[in-house]
Amino acid sequence: MNLARFPRIRLGHLPTPLEPMERLSKHLGGPKLWIKRDDCTGLSTGGNKTRKLEYLMAETLAQGADTVITQGATQSNHARQTAAAAAKLGLACHILLEDRTGYTDPAYTRSANVLMDRLHGATISRRPGGADMQAEMEALAEELRKTGRRPYVIPGGGSNPVGALGYVGAALELVAQASEIGLRIDHVVHATGSAGTQAGLVAGLVGLNSGIPVLGIGVRAPREKQEANVLTLAQRTADHLGLPQGTIRAEHVRANCDYVGQGYGIPTQGMVEAVKLLAEQEGILLDPVYSGKGMAGLIDLIGKGRFGPEENVVFIHTGGAVGLFGYPDAFDLPAEAG
Image (cartoon, rainbow, N blue to C red):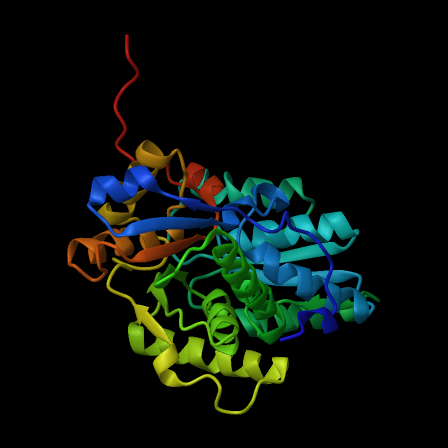
């Protein structure tokens, strides 16, 4: 897989660290836990979308666009990183935020990621939950074209075959890092939502014939729908890469969607406990929507004996800790000492 033949703009601090989580592994009694720190990609506090945007923004410029349009939930990490990338490249940025939770607390609607969207100079508009966000973006693009702008529409999460190339690259990077330190990776686990991260990882790891399985912990859709979305995108990404037909098969895609709770972006007790545990055991901050629920799922599966005590499990940290500031009431923290 020759990724160098695809246009790319360097936006991230790569490669990101691959670190052992020794205290957490001991606390849980195994397996051997590792974390791939894609919260350290550097673009506006980092996160997984930076890898995707390196390819998406390259295509934006190649097409002569002067404006990018994207969409996400109110506290979208993708929107924040897109706004930052647009600022860095001198592009106008329009973000459509969908209300998927019904929360009205100003900490949620105006702080955290939303505050950073505005700091990066993005134009924000809101849409109700359940809106056809792709259609809304296309309608906005048409309006902008009438004013002489040249918009480029980025799908939610940056999840299309171009964006997924970022996580094909992450797969190559991870395998190289593991080889360098003599680490046998038995499982890769991460939070999965818009499907691009998991699709890219699957396409990359299967294309390398690595034998490393990927488990996505779902944060939104039911398992059947999530796996179907990932499989379709992984196959489209493989086609984009020029891999042989049939390289990606259904057995390569696994998602566990038992940890969504009441819905996307709505806190769960497991998420709260996972965020606190990582903060206290490893000094690492997760986010309340993706990596927190992903880690909650991983911890619960460890407790159920899903992984062997000597297996090496790599958790992909997809970033987004700034979103914690949008959920101040979710965490029942002790009062300050006298």
